[in-house]
Length: 504
Image (cartoon, rainbow, N blue to C red; front, side, top):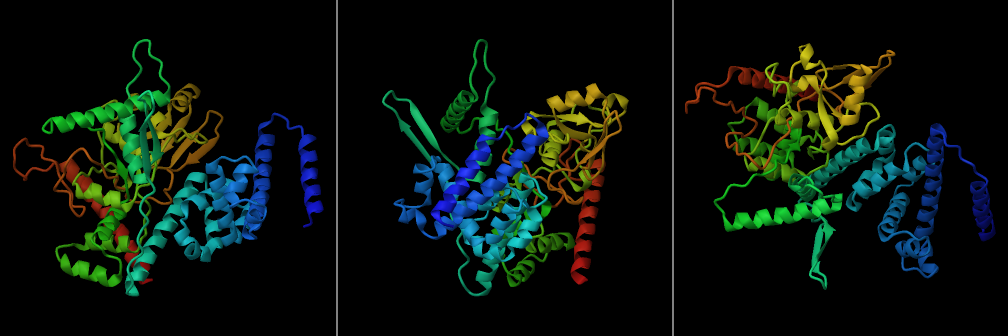
């Protein structure tokens, strides 16, 4: 396109915007947002083509980042994001066409650029059409999770191919993290930086646990509360060094992982990457039963998702292995939620049950509400006063606003064993939601944490608590045993199904 024609296009767009009067109507705003996203797709396509031709250098800019900052007024972060997006759209033109056609959104494109590392652009670029088809109907959160699964599979395949070809496995780049702390002229400390996602799980949980409420007459901003919490954390750590035998109260960090994710972490920790290495691993561990072998096979095939913290932030297999190696495990969720039942003896949900329900729901379950877990109560589906049990099969996460609205409007609801939640409004309207990422009912065992040792918990063996008060091991709790046996039966049934699928 000639320079004159390009100028006329921009002038026509400017006239259309000047003449536009957008009414304050919800549907109109939503459609306008969609049209703005399509316009952004065309701008991004033009940026990608312009950058690929080397035009920024021709016009006197060192690169596209410099152009976006100085000519377009973007911040450094946004300019770098635009440059990365331009490179990705050049490498994957089908992604640009899908965005232009409205099949996917700009948010999903940004997630593709952020989640897929440069080392896998070529590998995952062989199936861009499949990737677009997969993420097209998904929300932003589900898109992020789907991309993380593809990256995890690509990492495993790259490592396995290198070992089979006699090459050194590719070295995973060290996590991107940095922290600067410098004093100003008035001796204030300025702290700035970022940490990787494993480190973020600890930092966020620690800051939230250390935050104290405002005192009488005190009004602090959220930033001030976090700054005070950081100081308190540092003070507590120094006090523990001065008194190494003293006891400290530690907020629990919960990692939610499918049981196969745990077995995958163990395999990676043992250096198992190829089928031959897996056979050697089985030969070195003749004590493994059918359950363990089946789970290790499932883990080797990488048929599982990504471990996450309670609020949904992903963590790596390395952190899962480290938590498991420390011997601190807690079964928050099990097959179809058959762990953690308190029956009718307790009116309020325990902290363990609350963690289990929040790990399953990942936020408010009311349709259309995106309130995070930290703003949620646990709601009895069948009211306690009407005979409802206080266990995880009768509880869902609801934010305070939706919880109050539920009771004020007289909404009826039902929770299935697989987590499907149905609400029926007074006018008969039915709305159904499922827990994020749950495509089918299956066992999910969140791992706990850094606060309590459980040295008996190895290779998924059940640990039965003693209820007799003595030091013997002959009196396991019968209810706990029955629940563990039921969970074990469901996992074995899942393994048999996988074996039949492989045989077919």
